[in-house]
Length: 59
Image (cartoon, rainbow, N blue to C red; front, side, top):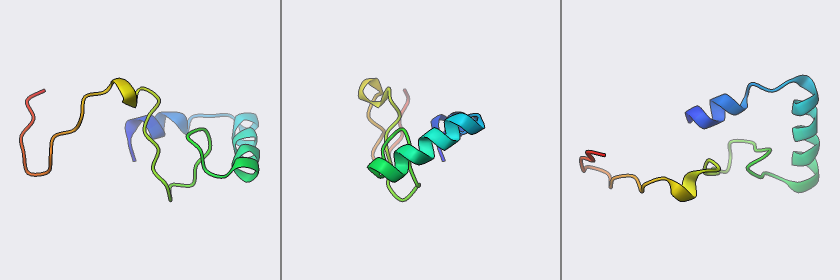
């Protein structure tokens, strides 16, 4: 689990219930998810591409 997802787990009961209702109404989305489908963090469009497996990245 990424640090982004761990940070998002710190929500109150009202927010958790709202996300559960959103999940039930719309299915998995970046706002409410089930861990069966991966979603990138919101700032992923600006993040550098990860290194290919087996290569070393010095970024």
